[in-house]
Length: 212
Image (cartoon, rainbow, N blue to C red):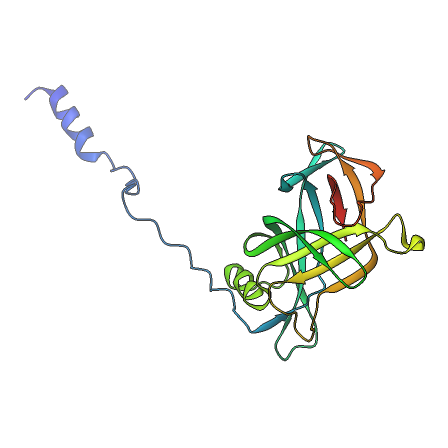
């Protein structure tokens, strides 16, 4: 046998095997599943708050504040059964329709909101989102919110606010009227909010950003 061939055989026999690459086809290790969020019994306060961009078509999903998109939002305060403190959630409200409502002294044009179909924006309670929205809807049904020029001159240019629901509010026999509790700033056709305060006549709503 030629010496060159013996040398090649020796090199092949002495070569160390390379590290074995991991099998890319092997299944990945599952990340630990998150525990389900709790679904405690709770009561929702009828004293809602929010910022609603309302135009002739209903509640806009968003508006522009100095060019920055901001969502319309509605907040609820929730208290777990047996607890002494509350937490809050904020939703992007799902508009259903316009309506009207009145008290013995005031008349409002209102927006009707389906809470169960709304989108969660901020959950400080850390409970199951779908459960929370469905339970608020179970307690209230659709909620109804109205705005009108303040009845009393001393409350203007702030607006009176009506809070109502399909079902009677807990511990209440009627809707809730808040005097001088809202502001409204003119909204243009593109959703830009300005600095001009507006006061819709009772029974009307003008395009505006309503804050209450």
